[in-house]
Each structure stands twice: as C-alpha cells, then as structure tokens.
Image (spheres, rainbow, N blue to C red):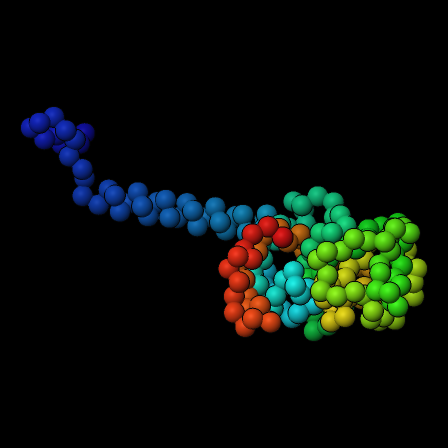
Length: 197
C-alpha cells in the first residue's frame, strides 16, 4: 500500500514514472514490429521510372499483399522476381489485370485497355517507347500488366523479359509517401509531397 502524506495524498514511488514510460516504449516497439512483419513494410524507391509521381529516394508505406485485397488498375505496387533487373524489387503502376487487353498507340502515345483510351494524369509524358512486347496483349490469369509513370524512362511489362507479372510476385500496394527523396528537377525534397499515393 503506497505511503500517504499527512495531507491524505498518495506519495509517488521513486522510479514509477520511468517504469511506465519504458513499458509504453516497449509495447509500442513490439506493436510496430508485428505490424511491419505481417501487415506493412517501408520500401525505398530506386530510380526514376515513376517520375513525377515518385522520386528516387522516396520512402513508401506498403501494405503487404495478403492484407490489401485484389489489385486494381491504377494501384502503385511493389513487385519482386529473380528475373527482374539486378533481382531488385520494382515500383510500378497496375495498368490492367487478368483478362483485360492492353494496346498502345505509340505514335500518338495513348494506352488503351479493353478498347478504351486511358486517362492518365499521373504520367510524365505520353507513351512512345516500345520495348518489344507485341500489342494488343491480353493479360493472363493471375497476372497484372505494369508500367512506370515515366513511360519513356521505364523498363516494365512492355519488355518481353518482364511481360505480365504474376500477382504472387507482388509484395504489396504502396499507400503512403512517408519521406520524400530529392525531386530531380529541383534538387531538393518537396515536403508537401508527403501523403497518400
């Protein structure tokens, strides 16, 4: 039973505040470990294939595949496969999902999915670079067709060696920009870019 002062108030035990602070810190760290081990992770962007949406050096919060549901057109995803360049994970945008047909008018720079021209306000420039995949291309079952937002500076599903990507190779969906890298054109971090992707 805590000691009581003569005025009737409880006297604080020495070190109790430090113990409570340490306990809260340990619980927070354990919760973060569980969340990042099973539900989410932080991934860094390497390269400029997603400019201007993402910059080299950006840190993203990525929800793991098992927790993010079905992938949809427009999602920014992280994919990993030994056949990728250097075996490193890549960050790209889902353009089409299984059963959808992708076609590209490289002369006019327009991407079509199931015959409809895509509205793509996020791209850096129109799509003029063909990497060898023959179009029209129908996405196989269980796969997605990925492209970078920097269309003429991205190695993606237009290249036959990458092609359609099996959904099992997707690590997860990028949902939040935690820390911006340096914007290439400005040579500095744009803190206003922090937020939902």
